[in-house]
Image (cartoon, rainbow, N blue to C red; front, top):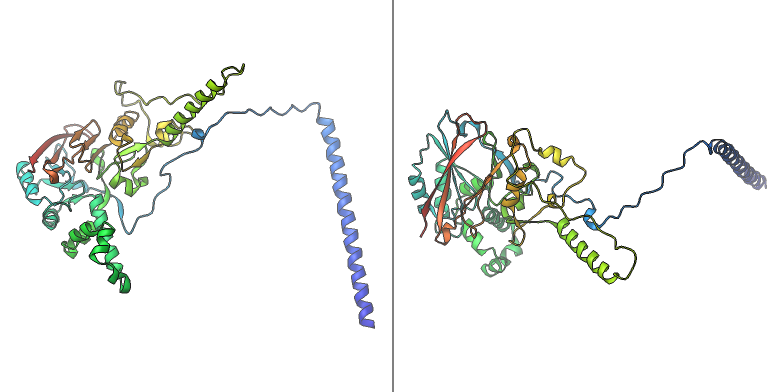
Length: 403
């Protein structure tokens, strides 16, 4: 009985406390609201009226859009960038040379002939391969053996990448997965050719290929070597490894969206031609970057950093690399972009990969894939230091027939 009495008293006290607390809170809130309202009335006449909101017509093409804003993680131990040692960089004083060779594709005998033609001397010259050294041709192990013997540098091409990935996948398979990985299954996955080439290489050769970077920087000459290309306006350490090994052209999603929006606006305007109100206009079409004829001064131009810090981008500054040929050739975009920069911030890219276009020489790009494995030529770019030039170089192009 006493226990029930204590329980009732406890419940009554709790209810009383809850009601009292609620009353006090409500009273304080009312008083605070009343005081604040009185103050607002006193200052209402002297306070400026809030600005009217400005309505800006934005379309999808005006939304924030970017490519490669963050450092990308390495893929399966892949090295994105490496720098050529300074002692190998040619200067006018040391009389050294860089012999940069396009896609070899297992054509070891032709490579030997090309090195003889350029009078290659290991004591003064350094050999660099632009990727796709192996596969398709008759002697991939011979090519890798020669490059290793000559202490050559190279970058990873899409064929080296596919072969290394296929070998790693085949090695990782065990048990039932390994039994199912027959020649027919490999052919169905498109791996048979890559595995056949990879299995001809020694363990040491595979390890040498796996350590190759995707981008080789020759900083004193302001030069990059990459197999397929680089996206202009993106720092090398932020480039997408897949794109560097596979790209051929660039597409501009913002530009395409803008064109579609302009078409829609014109269509809507035609449909509403009887209306007194003008059809809403989207943003004006993009202006192109500076032409090649504009004056190039050392003090004029921008830097990658200043361009990256801008809040507004032109439609053509958002470029997406693709493997196909339907977009703008990346080398054309690269050359156009370099002319925006100060001379001291411009870089040359030496690349391979695009056998269909063949050898290409432009102001800031050299394409060295001249389709040797299909009966074309094997091309070498011989680079020497320029007298009195900081970062300057002279070059000679040499070729041998692959037929």
